[in-house]
Amino acid sequence: VQLQASGGGLVQPGGSLRLSCAASGNIFTFNVMGWYRQAPGNKRDLVASITSGGITNYVDSVKGRFTISRDNAKNTVYLQMNSLKPEDTAVYYCYVLTRGMTYWGQGTLVTVSS
Image 1 (spheres, rainbow, N blue to C red):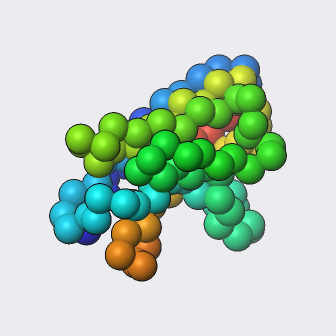
Image 2 (cartoon, rainbow, N blue to C red; image 1 turned 45 degrees about the horizontal axis):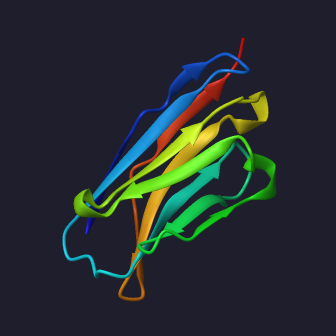
């Protein structure tokens, strides 16, 4: 299984970015996809996840600002990030949990700064 993430970059506070992550390979129909992030000096923390059935989960700090969605036909997960804050600055990693295994994308840097 391979994942390819894209969409990171530099944005001003209050701005928006959309991350995408396409998975390929042997992915079971039922799976969970999502995003973690890791800021410098911090551990990697879950941001949001979505099951193949569309059930979503968000960390409290992004609720109401971030929206996770997916296209099952393309095995692609998206993270729409609005009202970005400097504390959202981190490397964002997508993942897929399938057949009891977790696979990771390469990470994409999001920098929120004026």
